[in-house]
Image (tube, rainbow, N blue to C red):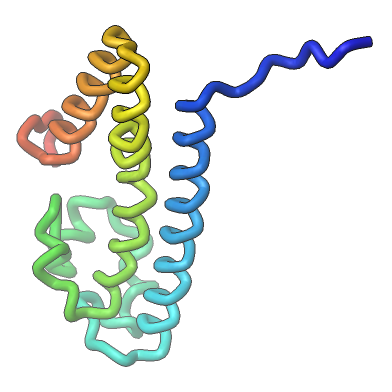
Length: 139
């Protein structure tokens, strides 16, 4: 019996390495910012004591009653403990883009034009989706 298992390509390994490091960084940020939030070091947009009373609300009603930010407006409120938690979420959500950008040089070096174009399109679509320029629904 030989070792017939398929080997991961260079770009797969690079993507996985970046994803692993990014996932650890995002998780670390989530833990640190949650500790800051729970310790009450910073003020909150939504009072910690009142948060439980809002759990039953629909999202639109919650946003209205708490004056919580929507879209990327949370970035202007990072001096609040409850908004700091979004940093870790944003890192985790952005890892796909970071990983694709990380493997672009490999595709360029290998002259793999097809995958280079696919990866560039993927990055463009993800950035466009995250930008909030395109909206749908009643939110």
